[in-house]
Figure 1 (cartoon, one colour):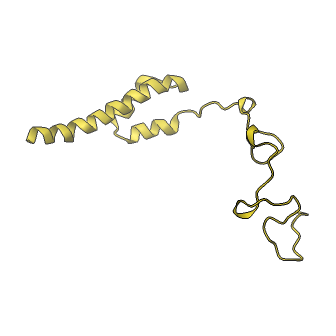
Figure 2: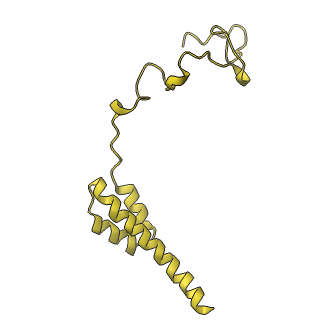
Figure 3: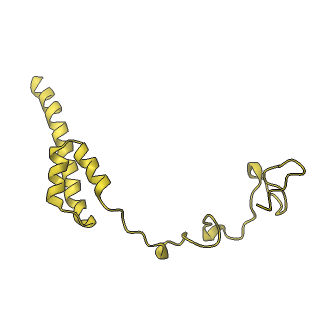
Length: 113
């Protein structure tokens, strides 16, 4: 019974550290970082080393030209399968284009802003 407890208390954290180090070793070259150095940091400095790697690695490259939902005239993207549908009002009811969506009191006109 004592051997099982020792195996759990020592083996499980060691397995996590090896897993973190293996992930860092595989992922570091993709981000232009030294894999041996960062795998050693992730292994020998528990948890902090792994999270330090995650914060230090460069962000993945993002090319807005390849993103079909980036840019455009609308402030949000509408999927092409939903193009041309009528906008919904409160609680999913259909509304007219000139209907006030927010039910502002009479005399309040926010369309100038």
